[in-house]
Length: 200
Image (cartoon, rainbow, N blue to C red; front, side):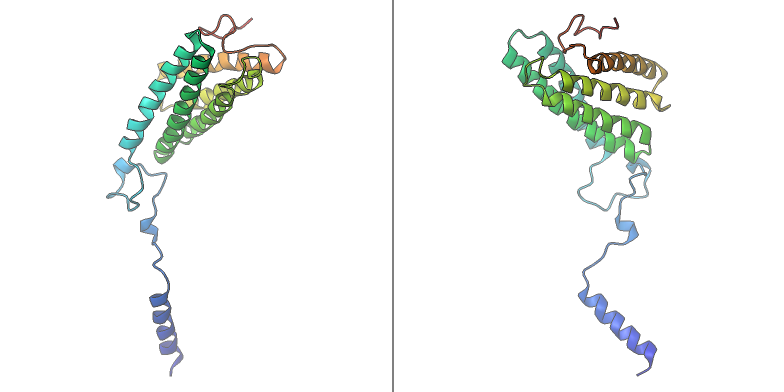
């Protein structure tokens, strides 16, 4: 039997017993926005950008409201519960926004939301602690918040007004983080919190 025919038979038999391997077209390109892709995605588990926004938006709102509410409630257990749920909601929302912006090719913003999620996770770890005991986690989280806001605000995708407020907030959180790292006892309830981080 000629060598070429023998090779063809072996190849055909191999293809019959090897599981189907997805082609390049079966893989989703994370740098390509679904709104501009040629046809629907082939992965059934892939969430659309609209679904990500629908889930992330309430997470941001719930996180913001519970964070503020937890600061003002007089009961310690209620404050810890509110801050715990606040942290979980913000971590989930940040993770989804990371995916959303990464798909759109906005790597700087995606990186910012990753850093924000890590910082929020650190602060979440101290939600049920005594305020004094949670100071190290709070300082580390504030530092990562500052970095995250700086990354997100550095992207030209964001409106100028949003970028301006983001940089201001970044400086304030960075100031708090530096003070905590320098040994000053600052908690989320330290004056003049919860309205603005102290600069002096």
